[in-house]
Image (spheres, rainbow, N blue to C red):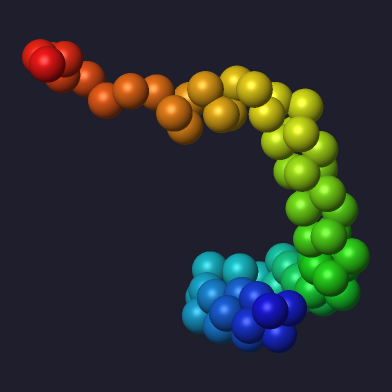
Length: 74
């Protein structure tokens, strides 16, 4: 996943003709750092998502199981 991320953003950076050499250098550094940190950050983000889901499980279940609008003719 990190290699796909790196390749796509590298194409964006190379296609941008409005950047000067200093901006291109800093953008490349940011891209390399983001690519290196990607495998570290994603698991932590997933754990935060799981913690959020566990904390708000009752509300999430309520929202998932909301009855559809309409008449209840029986």
